[in-house]
Length: 467
Image 1 (tube, rainbow, N blue to C red):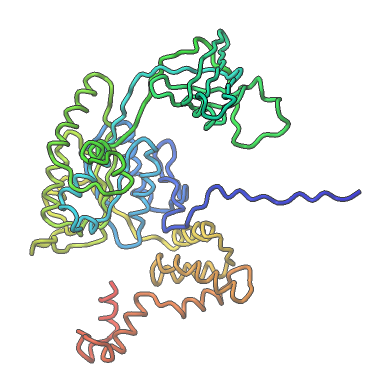
Image 2: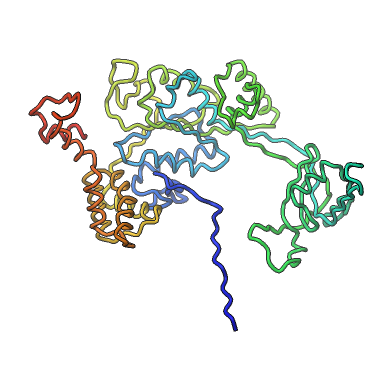
């Protein structure tokens, strides 16, 4: 008897690019907000993660708004990773907006307008409205097509039932078109919005589960609805204040959200929207969801931006502001004054400061293990020990960058597992900051516009420049 060979099928519905923080799934905390040593892609930084977890918990419960948090630490200590973990932990409905400090300095709009738009992107509005819905199981769909094309429009009948009643509805041209678009057939459970005529397919009825021997994985079975066919349902829409601003300020309406051409929004428009949202809140039609605005490289902001943030945080509808910096005591942009982290003292006084510490060798090893798994690179134990040592001596980011490069070197020699020789090869090919600076100091006389006088290229100065 001939052997039947089944062709192998691969599901390619979801393809994601691997990014610097694509392995982060959350903050890695348990139910008591205690940080696990390694969980959800997060390693180490237990105190910083616990502090971030407390902030996330308060945001979810809606207990704080208009507060600011500073993530401060050396480069490569996981500040952006913690912010990404917060974004994943907060959930879908709570808005989370991210931007870098240097993004504000564009020619298209003023700095304060860009900050105001970012603030309003981080404030959600949950709007509730009641709508009439026809919900039932399709018993039969009859469509009468005219014998002569173009003689008359199509007509038809739709029979819907619940566990208690059954009704026949007459269909017009638009409804027939909508049913055809959704591929509705007998046995489907559907919902029809009476106001807009929108048809939503909820799934197949359990009573029809044995109609076919095999069905696709996307087929969902649901119970036949009970009670009346016509029901009043509460529909909840979640939008941000910025989306409402754009829709009400531009001639092309919501299309501006897709084109990105929002431009500057007038203060009068925002005042009218704030008044309307306040009315909806009083009537119980809407509620405000304060989200999170994350500004990375906050030392890039100037004194005008910090002054604006001071005032904006005192607003009734302000989100949680999370900022991050890797600077020490440095100048405040736009002034000659020096301050911790390059942030004015009055604004620094408003911040809850979360400090991140340098990673230990054990943490570096765990992070490299996670990144090898994320990048689908198989590496030997000796190679991982060597890569961990490189991460200690140079930086974690440099060690992570060598993972894919060493995998390609391994592929070149037709190997399957990355060995020490592959790590050594790419280490010689690609310089880290310290070795690159040493090379510059050694041959600085041969470079153009060198500002270091000859004879001063000693090792102490090299280390000073790197640090």
